Amino acid sequence: MEIPIPDMHELSIAQNILDIACDAVSQTERGNVREIRMRIGPYAGIVADSLEFGFSILAAGSEMPEATLAIEVTPIVLACDSCGGSSPVEYGIFACPLCGDRTIRIVSGNELQIVDIQLLTFRQ
Ligand SMILES: [Zn+2]
Image (cartoon, rainbow, N blue to C red):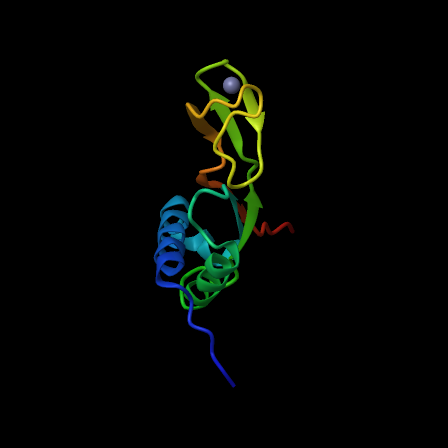
């Protein structure tokens, strides 16, 4: 059986996410962490599958063994300094779809954010 090796870049980001979640949740609650919701843009330079895989390996040996990642991929939106418009575009487009100018800024599509951390709650 071949054991896949996670990419080092995604592995180090997975470790950061785990560290941030660990800091955000009290020690007694860490075992109850079930899902860490994230927003990741296509331009964040992250391979989502690789991040999820790396995270699952690291989480298994951590204080949050049940934690998984739920990744929402954000849309790419460009803002144009020339015409003032902003437009959703496909990956790889670097010109304003409205006027064709290339003086554009990415206003959405490069995020790497933790949205929230879901805990299992007990009720009696
Ligand atoms: Zn424009």
